[in-house]
Image 1 (cartoon, rainbow, N blue to C red):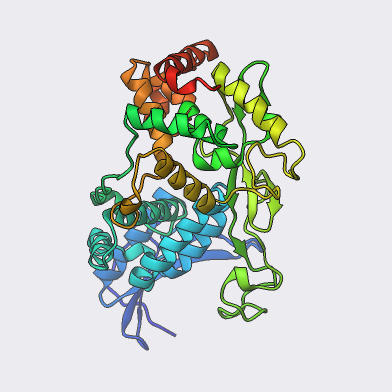
Image 2 (tube, rainbow, N blue to C red):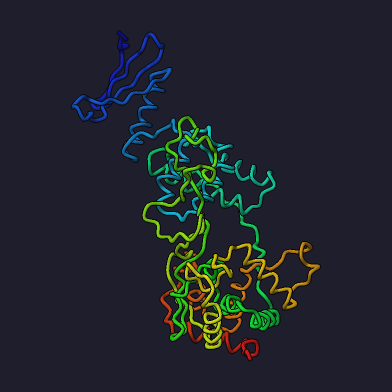
Length: 429
């Protein structure tokens, strides 16, 4: 039995301090409550000197005072990351946002820092992560997104007593790369509207330019969300591809029962959707989910757009449409993002906005430019920013904190100004 060395004095409540002869170490012990069966629970630490043991014990007691329990100094980032993704992120993130978090964790965070304990991370480790991503040829936007994922991971670790602080907060985040998204000039926008008017499904481009809908909101728009008598399109859904996950059972020592690495290859795969997540499955991974902002918004439609939408619905009434989509392929299947972009590029060619020689030689405007054009023209017309925010569905917290509710009358007036601006382009024979 280890002998307690003589000559030491301790105050009441300080616990015990013992010399462990067999290990040639000092052991500090304090009572730390009771186990469920009534046995006394003790907290102990060891050190080469009595002073080291006392200092370690003080640290543990300070952690108990602050966090309710000693900091877990053993959990590695590789162990914590999947736990955080599954228990903190999955219940609250949309499937594709969760997939992005998982990808950034798997690609950058875990390979570089996974073996480190969460509690031992330093600001220099975060800066090293930034440098590693940039040195690998990726953009500062990727570095920023990874930084934000790591920060969220460490914030939860601090709350769970895995780390004393979020060291990512002590490091300046990388600056995001300047977006190459632009907007069409007024002349190009007019040419696009005029050209679209001659196409059977040209109304989806009118709505894109005159309503500010995101691509996924257009391709996921349903007929039941239209109220043409009131001239309103309710943005209630967006079309998205949901990632798949394993459904074959639990992973044992890193191996799934189906022996496949990717969930999409599992014979029992299922959609990776949190419990309670609202969605409508259309086909395979294609689903309708709620808009990016998480809220439904009503987009006022110009009278000319209402007239053309009535024509469009009448013209396509006999086509297959199992999902009730406003715009769809002739066989009734949803329009995929790549198909939508191809159609947009063809429209820009037909409108003379780009030339054949531009393709492959310079970046081609994406469908998001239509949305930016809506906001840009409304801004140039002097429409208040909060009204623009309601029409196009801004999500930024910094923006929404400043915005108050905007009446539908104000939004309709703004759309009316937009229509007047493009009046010549909206004359359809």
